[in-house]
Image (cartoon, one colour):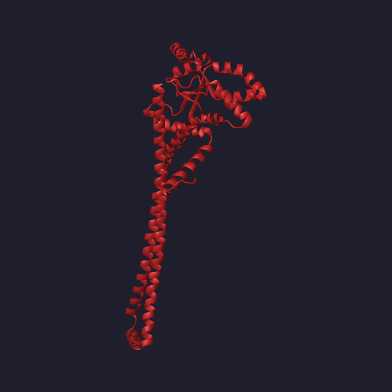
Length: 344
Protein backbone atom coordinates (compact mmCIF):
# COMPACT_ATOMS: atom_id res chain seq x y z
CA UNK A 1 0.00 0.00 0.00
CA UNK A 2 1.39 3.41 -0.97
CA UNK A 3 1.55 6.30 1.47
CA UNK A 4 -1.77 8.11 1.55
CA UNK A 5 -3.66 5.18 0.02
CA UNK A 6 -6.56 3.78 2.00
CA UNK A 7 -6.12 0.16 3.13
CA UNK A 8 -7.63 -2.48 0.88
CA UNK A 9 -10.62 -4.45 2.05
CA UNK A 10 -10.38 -8.23 2.42
CA UNK A 11 -12.30 -8.60 -0.85
CA UNK A 12 -9.90 -6.25 -2.67
CA UNK A 13 -6.87 -8.03 -1.22
CA UNK A 14 -8.21 -11.36 -2.48
CA UNK A 15 -8.84 -9.91 -5.95
CA UNK A 16 -5.33 -8.42 -6.00
CA UNK A 17 -3.77 -11.76 -5.00
CA UNK A 18 -5.76 -13.70 -7.62
CA UNK A 19 -4.73 -11.21 -10.31
CA UNK A 20 -1.08 -11.53 -9.27
CA UNK A 21 -1.27 -15.33 -9.44
CA UNK A 22 -2.97 -15.25 -12.85
CA UNK A 23 -0.37 -12.81 -14.21
CA UNK A 24 2.47 -15.07 -13.04
CA UNK A 25 0.79 -18.11 -14.58
CA UNK A 26 0.50 -16.35 -17.94
CA UNK A 27 4.15 -15.26 -17.85
CA UNK A 28 5.37 -18.77 -17.10
CA UNK A 29 3.39 -20.81 -19.63
CA UNK A 30 4.39 -21.55 -23.20
CA UNK A 31 2.84 -19.42 -26.00
CA UNK A 32 1.42 -22.62 -27.52
CA UNK A 33 -0.69 -23.11 -24.39
CA UNK A 34 -1.81 -19.49 -24.60
CA UNK A 35 -2.80 -20.22 -28.16
CA UNK A 36 -4.95 -23.11 -26.90
CA UNK A 37 -6.71 -20.71 -24.51
CA UNK A 38 -7.21 -18.29 -27.39
CA UNK A 39 -8.72 -20.97 -29.65
CA UNK A 40 -10.94 -22.21 -26.82
CA UNK A 41 -12.29 -18.69 -26.27
CA UNK A 42 -12.88 -18.14 -29.98
CA UNK A 43 -14.60 -21.49 -30.40
CA UNK A 44 -16.90 -21.24 -27.40
CA UNK A 45 -17.47 -17.50 -27.11
CA UNK A 46 -16.51 -15.71 -30.30
CA UNK A 47 -18.65 -17.85 -32.54
CA UNK A 48 -21.14 -15.06 -31.85
CA UNK A 49 -18.83 -12.61 -33.62
CA UNK A 50 -17.23 -14.92 -36.16
CA UNK A 51 -13.89 -13.28 -35.45
CA UNK A 52 -10.59 -13.90 -33.69
CA UNK A 53 -9.51 -12.66 -30.28
CA UNK A 54 -6.42 -10.78 -31.35
CA UNK A 55 -5.11 -7.30 -31.84
CA UNK A 56 -4.13 -6.75 -35.46
CA UNK A 57 -1.68 -3.90 -36.00
CA UNK A 58 0.41 -2.64 -38.91
CA UNK A 59 4.01 -2.15 -37.77
CA UNK A 60 6.10 0.57 -39.38
CA UNK A 61 9.85 0.99 -39.69
CA UNK A 62 10.55 3.34 -36.79
CA UNK A 63 8.90 1.10 -34.20
CA UNK A 64 11.08 -1.85 -35.31
CA UNK A 65 14.27 0.21 -35.31
CA UNK A 66 13.62 1.91 -31.96
CA UNK A 67 12.89 -1.39 -30.20
CA UNK A 68 15.88 -3.10 -31.82
CA UNK A 69 18.11 -0.28 -30.54
CA UNK A 70 16.58 -0.62 -27.08
CA UNK A 71 17.42 -4.32 -27.06
CA UNK A 72 21.03 -3.75 -28.17
CA UNK A 73 21.68 -0.96 -25.66
CA UNK A 74 19.60 -2.10 -22.68
CA UNK A 75 18.79 -5.76 -23.43
CA UNK A 76 15.13 -4.84 -23.18
CA UNK A 77 12.47 -4.83 -25.85
CA UNK A 78 8.80 -4.52 -25.02
CA UNK A 79 7.87 -5.26 -28.60
CA UNK A 80 9.96 -8.45 -28.65
CA UNK A 81 8.10 -9.77 -25.63
CA UNK A 82 4.78 -8.59 -27.01
CA UNK A 83 5.00 -10.42 -30.33
CA UNK A 84 5.42 -13.75 -28.53
CA UNK A 85 1.75 -13.55 -27.55
CA UNK A 86 -0.76 -15.23 -29.90
CA UNK A 87 -3.21 -12.46 -29.02
CA UNK A 88 -1.44 -9.91 -31.21
CA UNK A 89 -0.73 -10.07 -34.92
CA UNK A 90 1.71 -7.67 -36.55
CA UNK A 91 1.51 -7.01 -40.28
CA UNK A 92 3.53 -4.86 -42.63
CA UNK A 93 3.75 -4.06 -46.35
CA UNK A 94 6.78 -5.24 -48.40
CA UNK A 95 8.03 -1.65 -48.17
CA UNK A 96 9.04 -2.33 -44.54
CA UNK A 97 11.95 -4.56 -45.60
CA UNK A 98 13.07 -2.09 -48.28
CA UNK A 99 13.03 0.81 -45.86
CA UNK A 100 14.86 -1.19 -43.19
CA UNK A 101 17.54 -2.17 -45.69
CA UNK A 102 18.17 1.52 -46.37
CA UNK A 103 18.12 2.64 -42.75
CA UNK A 104 20.12 -0.12 -41.05
CA UNK A 105 23.56 1.15 -42.25
CA UNK A 106 22.61 4.77 -41.50
CA UNK A 107 21.31 4.04 -37.99
CA UNK A 108 24.23 1.72 -37.19
CA UNK A 109 26.73 4.42 -38.09
CA UNK A 110 24.84 7.17 -36.28
CA UNK A 111 24.28 5.11 -33.11
CA UNK A 112 27.81 3.62 -33.25
CA UNK A 113 26.62 0.04 -33.02
CA UNK A 114 27.66 -3.12 -34.83
CA UNK A 115 25.67 -3.37 -38.07
CA UNK A 116 25.73 -7.17 -38.13
CA UNK A 117 24.31 -7.42 -34.62
CA UNK A 118 21.71 -4.80 -35.54
CA UNK A 119 20.62 -6.84 -38.57
CA UNK A 120 20.34 -10.02 -36.51
CA UNK A 121 18.04 -8.36 -33.98
CA UNK A 122 15.87 -6.82 -36.68
CA UNK A 123 15.63 -10.21 -38.38
CA UNK A 124 14.17 -11.61 -35.16
CA UNK A 125 11.48 -8.95 -35.30
CA UNK A 126 10.78 -9.61 -38.97
CA UNK A 127 10.23 -13.32 -38.29
CA UNK A 128 7.27 -12.32 -36.15
CA UNK A 129 5.85 -9.75 -38.58
CA UNK A 130 3.73 -10.99 -41.46
CA UNK A 131 4.56 -9.24 -44.72
CA UNK A 132 1.49 -8.96 -46.95
CA UNK A 133 0.69 -7.05 -50.10
CA UNK A 134 -3.04 -6.40 -49.85
CA UNK A 135 -3.17 -2.74 -50.74
CA UNK A 136 -6.11 -1.94 -52.99
CA UNK A 137 -5.96 0.95 -55.44
CA UNK A 138 -8.75 2.66 -53.57
CA UNK A 139 -6.80 2.35 -50.30
CA UNK A 140 -3.61 3.65 -51.95
CA UNK A 141 -5.48 6.66 -53.31
CA UNK A 142 -7.06 7.40 -49.95
CA UNK A 143 -3.75 6.93 -48.13
CA UNK A 144 -2.05 9.35 -50.52
CA UNK A 145 -4.67 12.01 -49.85
CA UNK A 146 -4.35 11.51 -46.10
CA UNK A 147 -0.57 11.28 -45.64
CA UNK A 148 1.05 12.02 -49.00
CA UNK A 149 1.84 15.66 -48.26
CA UNK A 150 3.32 14.81 -44.87
CA UNK A 151 5.53 11.84 -45.78
CA UNK A 152 5.14 9.68 -48.89
CA UNK A 153 7.17 6.88 -47.28
CA UNK A 154 4.25 6.28 -44.86
CA UNK A 155 1.70 5.70 -47.63
CA UNK A 156 2.25 1.88 -47.82
CA UNK A 157 1.55 1.51 -44.07
CA UNK A 158 -1.60 3.62 -44.16
CA UNK A 159 -2.73 1.90 -47.36
CA UNK A 160 -2.35 -1.54 -45.78
CA UNK A 161 -4.12 -0.32 -42.64
CA UNK A 162 -7.08 0.85 -44.71
CA UNK A 163 -7.12 -2.27 -46.91
CA UNK A 164 -7.28 -4.89 -44.17
CA UNK A 165 -9.17 -2.76 -41.64
CA UNK A 166 -6.66 -3.48 -38.90
CA UNK A 167 -6.95 -2.14 -35.36
CA UNK A 168 -4.33 0.53 -36.03
CA UNK A 169 -0.74 1.32 -36.91
CA UNK A 170 2.02 0.70 -34.36
CA UNK A 171 4.24 3.71 -34.92
CA UNK A 172 6.06 6.59 -33.31
CA UNK A 173 5.99 8.58 -36.55
CA UNK A 174 4.53 12.02 -35.84
CA UNK A 175 3.44 12.31 -39.47
CA UNK A 176 0.72 9.72 -38.85
CA UNK A 177 -0.48 10.91 -35.47
CA UNK A 178 -3.27 13.43 -35.23
CA UNK A 179 -5.05 12.27 -38.39
CA UNK A 180 -8.66 11.46 -37.47
CA UNK A 181 -9.07 8.55 -39.89
CA UNK A 182 -5.82 6.85 -38.84
CA UNK A 183 -5.70 5.10 -35.50
CA UNK A 184 -2.14 4.91 -34.21
CA UNK A 185 -0.59 3.10 -31.26
CA UNK A 186 2.46 5.13 -30.30
CA UNK A 187 3.75 2.78 -27.59
CA UNK A 188 3.98 -1.01 -27.56
CA UNK A 189 3.00 -0.84 -23.89
CA UNK A 190 -0.54 0.22 -24.82
CA UNK A 191 -0.89 -2.77 -27.12
CA UNK A 192 0.62 -4.87 -24.33
CA UNK A 193 -2.17 -3.81 -21.97
CA UNK A 194 -4.75 -4.97 -24.51
CA UNK A 195 -3.07 -8.34 -25.05
CA UNK A 196 -2.81 -8.76 -21.27
CA UNK A 197 -6.58 -8.24 -20.99
CA UNK A 198 -7.13 -10.79 -23.77
CA UNK A 199 -4.79 -13.32 -22.14
CA UNK A 200 -6.42 -13.04 -18.72
CA UNK A 201 -9.89 -13.15 -20.24
CA UNK A 202 -9.18 -16.26 -22.30
CA UNK A 203 -7.52 -18.07 -19.40
CA UNK A 204 -10.40 -17.10 -17.10
CA UNK A 205 -12.89 -18.41 -19.63
CA UNK A 206 -11.08 -21.77 -19.77
CA UNK A 207 -11.10 -21.97 -15.97
CA UNK A 208 -14.83 -21.26 -15.90
CA UNK A 209 -15.65 -23.62 -18.73
CA UNK A 210 -13.41 -26.54 -17.81
CA UNK A 211 -12.19 -26.08 -14.25
CA UNK A 212 -15.29 -24.73 -12.51
CA UNK A 213 -17.48 -27.86 -12.92
CA UNK A 214 -14.66 -30.08 -11.62
CA UNK A 215 -13.88 -27.77 -8.67
CA UNK A 216 -17.59 -27.45 -7.80
CA UNK A 217 -17.96 -31.22 -7.76
CA UNK A 218 -14.87 -31.61 -5.58
CA UNK A 219 -16.15 -28.98 -3.11
CA UNK A 220 -19.55 -30.69 -3.00
CA UNK A 221 -18.01 -34.10 -2.35
CA UNK A 222 -15.62 -32.70 0.26
CA UNK A 223 -18.42 -30.91 2.14
CA UNK A 224 -20.63 -34.02 1.96
CA UNK A 225 -17.78 -36.18 3.27
CA UNK A 226 -17.05 -33.83 6.18
CA UNK A 227 -20.71 -33.41 7.16
CA UNK A 228 -21.29 -37.16 6.91
CA UNK A 229 -18.27 -37.75 9.15
CA UNK A 230 -19.57 -35.22 11.69
CA UNK A 231 -23.02 -36.81 11.68
CA UNK A 232 -21.62 -40.32 12.10
CA UNK A 233 -19.38 -39.14 14.95
CA UNK A 234 -22.40 -37.54 16.64
CA UNK A 235 -24.39 -40.75 16.36
CA UNK A 236 -21.43 -42.74 17.69
CA UNK A 237 -21.06 -40.54 20.79
CA UNK A 238 -24.80 -40.53 21.44
CA UNK A 239 -24.88 -44.30 20.93
CA UNK A 240 -22.00 -44.83 23.33
CA UNK A 241 -23.70 -42.81 26.08
CA UNK A 242 -27.03 -44.52 25.50
CA UNK A 243 -25.40 -47.95 25.47
CA UNK A 244 -23.60 -47.15 28.73
CA UNK A 245 -26.82 -46.15 30.44
CA UNK A 246 -28.84 -49.04 28.99
CA UNK A 247 -26.07 -51.48 29.84
CA UNK A 248 -26.13 -50.43 33.48
CA UNK A 249 -29.91 -50.69 33.68
CA UNK A 250 -29.98 -54.09 31.94
CA UNK A 251 -27.24 -55.44 34.20
CA UNK A 252 -29.17 -54.43 37.29
CA UNK A 253 -32.49 -55.77 35.96
CA UNK A 254 -30.96 -59.18 35.17
CA UNK A 255 -29.18 -59.54 38.53
CA UNK A 256 -30.56 -61.81 41.36
CA UNK A 257 -33.12 -60.42 43.80
CA UNK A 258 -30.64 -60.53 46.67
CA UNK A 259 -28.22 -58.39 44.63
CA UNK A 260 -30.96 -55.89 43.89
CA UNK A 261 -31.84 -55.79 47.60
CA UNK A 262 -28.18 -55.25 48.42
CA UNK A 263 -27.96 -52.37 45.95
CA UNK A 264 -31.09 -50.86 47.49
CA UNK A 265 -29.58 -51.06 51.00
CA UNK A 266 -26.31 -49.51 49.72
CA UNK A 267 -28.26 -46.72 48.02
CA UNK A 268 -30.12 -45.95 51.25
CA UNK A 269 -26.86 -45.93 53.22
CA UNK A 270 -25.23 -43.61 50.65
CA UNK A 271 -28.18 -41.21 50.77
CA UNK A 272 -28.22 -41.17 54.57
CA UNK A 273 -24.46 -40.60 54.93
CA UNK A 274 -23.57 -37.00 54.04
CA UNK A 275 -20.07 -37.75 52.76
CA UNK A 276 -21.24 -40.73 50.76
CA UNK A 277 -24.10 -38.73 49.31
CA UNK A 278 -21.75 -35.94 48.31
CA UNK A 279 -19.39 -38.46 46.69
CA UNK A 280 -22.24 -39.91 44.64
CA UNK A 281 -23.41 -36.46 43.62
CA UNK A 282 -19.84 -35.45 42.70
CA UNK A 283 -19.47 -38.62 40.66
CA UNK A 284 -22.67 -37.91 38.77
CA UNK A 285 -21.66 -34.28 38.24
CA UNK A 286 -18.23 -35.32 37.00
CA UNK A 287 -19.80 -37.77 34.58
CA UNK A 288 -22.25 -35.15 33.31
CA UNK A 289 -19.46 -32.55 33.08
CA UNK A 290 -17.31 -35.02 31.16
CA UNK A 291 -20.10 -35.58 28.68
CA UNK A 292 -20.59 -31.80 28.39
CA UNK A 293 -16.85 -31.27 27.80
CA UNK A 294 -16.85 -33.89 25.06
CA UNK A 295 -19.86 -32.22 23.43
CA UNK A 296 -18.18 -28.79 23.73
CA UNK A 297 -15.00 -30.11 22.13
CA UNK A 298 -17.08 -31.70 19.39
CA UNK A 299 -18.91 -28.40 18.86
CA UNK A 300 -15.64 -26.45 18.55
CA UNK A 301 -14.31 -28.96 16.01
CA UNK A 302 -17.56 -28.72 14.05
CA UNK A 303 -17.44 -24.92 14.22
CA UNK A 304 -13.83 -24.84 12.97
CA UNK A 305 -14.65 -27.15 10.07
CA UNK A 306 -17.64 -25.02 9.08
CA UNK A 307 -15.48 -21.87 9.24
CA UNK A 308 -12.89 -23.48 6.94
CA UNK A 309 -15.59 -24.57 4.50
CA UNK A 310 -17.18 -21.11 4.61
CA UNK A 311 -13.85 -19.37 3.95
CA UNK A 312 -13.11 -21.76 1.10
CA UNK A 313 -16.52 -21.13 -0.47
CA UNK A 314 -16.13 -17.37 0.02
CA UNK A 315 -12.71 -17.43 -1.68
CA UNK A 316 -14.20 -19.52 -4.48
CA UNK A 317 -17.02 -17.03 -5.04
CA UNK A 318 -14.56 -14.11 -5.12
CA UNK A 319 -12.43 -16.04 -7.60
CA UNK A 320 -15.46 -16.73 -9.78
CA UNK A 321 -16.39 -13.03 -9.66
CA UNK A 322 -12.84 -12.13 -10.72
CA UNK A 323 -12.85 -14.62 -13.61
CA UNK A 324 -16.23 -13.43 -14.87
CA UNK A 325 -15.01 -9.83 -14.66
CA UNK A 326 -11.94 -10.65 -16.76
CA UNK A 327 -14.10 -12.33 -19.41
CA UNK A 328 -16.40 -9.30 -19.47
CA UNK A 329 -13.38 -6.96 -19.72
CA UNK A 330 -12.07 -8.96 -22.66
CA UNK A 331 -15.34 -8.79 -24.58
CA UNK A 332 -15.77 -5.07 -23.78
CA UNK A 333 -12.18 -4.25 -24.84
CA UNK A 334 -12.56 -6.26 -28.05
CA UNK A 335 -15.83 -4.54 -28.96
CA UNK A 336 -14.38 -1.12 -28.18
CA UNK A 337 -11.32 -1.73 -30.37
CA UNK A 338 -13.43 -3.08 -33.22
CA UNK A 339 -15.79 -0.12 -33.13
CA UNK A 340 -12.90 2.34 -33.25
CA UNK A 341 -11.31 0.39 -36.08
CA UNK A 342 -14.53 0.46 -38.08
CA UNK A 343 -15.04 4.15 -37.43
CA UNK A 344 -11.48 4.83 -38.54
